Amino acid sequence: MPGGAGPAEGGAVTATRTAPRPTAAPDRPPRDLTVDLLRAVAMVAVAVGHWLVVVPGYADGRFDGVNALATVPLMRPLTWLFQVMPLFFVVGGVANAASWTGARARGEGYATWLRGRLVRLVRPAALLFGVGAGLAALLRAGGVPADVVEPVAWLVVVPVWFLAVYVLVVAVAPALWAAHERHGWGPAVVLAVGAAGVDAVRLARGDGLGEAIASVNFLLVFGACQQLGFGWYDGRLARCRATGWALLGGGLGALVLLTTVGPFPVSLVGHPGVEIANNAPPTVTLVALGLAQTGLALVLRPLLVRALDRRPVQAFALVMNGNAMTILLWHFTALALAAVVLLPLGVVPEPAAGSGAWWLVRLGTVVVGAAVLAPIVALAGRVERAPAGPACPPRRPWAPVVAVPLLATACAVITLDGLSGAGPLGLPVLAASLFVAGAALLRGQDSTASPSASSTHQTPPTP
Image (tube, rainbow, N blue to C red; front, top):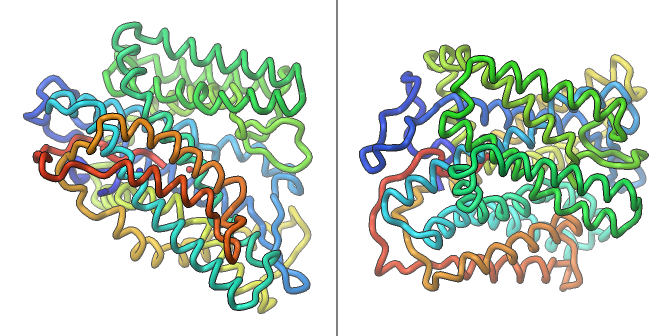
């Protein structure tokens, strides 16, 4: 889904398959470390998928890029493997359910809980915005043309769309969790049916208004995926051994029908030339994918449990979860930096799209991207890995609620416009103002803060 310590907060990954039951909340399920491993694998899929699909270019002193999904049709079915946003929101459901249940057990209210969740998102995002906007402004001040700076700057902040959606999903998680406790799978069905209805309107209209209405599906589709995470957390999905196979088969079957008999394209990621993008806004195909991914995770769960007995797997899950937001936010920056340095030198081959040599270059891009990203994570990840401290109530109970639309709008504007704006040297004044205003509302009452035990999966999954 697609935000501190890292997503593994609540206890380091150890050789035990589940962590001890916290004394502060004896009625809570034990920590399921397979969720950490799933999130770690999903993070790898996000970065590798983007590094494969985005093909940077350089000509006549300017940078541009090509979406390989538009030029290499073989890439489109691969999106069924690399489109992991539904899985992120599934494990996000586990995280939010665990966090909210723990907060209630400690006597914390909604405002305190929401503030803590948002702060974990804001801190690493603020670092990305500040560094990115600052560097873009410095380049402009140094005489680099705007049409050279802006494409690179936009590439840097593409992953921020996830935050625009996730802050909204986090804000409604306690209400949806209450509905899940009371009505079981009913809310998930309502959200999925609602998403299908929105798709029907979008397809029937085929205009700008239809696309605007379709934006509701960011909440409906990923909200339905979050409900699956709720079922994972409270054990509903584990009550029958056949559930995993049923979800896997049903989800894949629905996905095949939707993309063959139905009106949706095979690619689960949008690209130039496609009439409808399955991811922006999301369509009901991602609900089907979420069902399949959840089913596959349940089927593989025994293997994941055994894998976590191995120290290299534990270390992998711990490192990836401890830096999840940083990896999500900065992996496009790693690609941009590599492109800015290497492409002008002319050392990167440009074989025909889809050829064997082309695939070798794409795999090389993955290796270079990982090499560039590693030191970035080591430095920028310190913000995410910093201790969160005790739970701290907001200065005003309503402040975190008001901060949600401000932060979501700021992230949406940055995603659409990049780090360019009408301010001096192209600074994104509007987005920055909204973000700063939202962050300011998250200030806490330090004098009234009281220590609290950290709950499992405190950090959201992260794009």
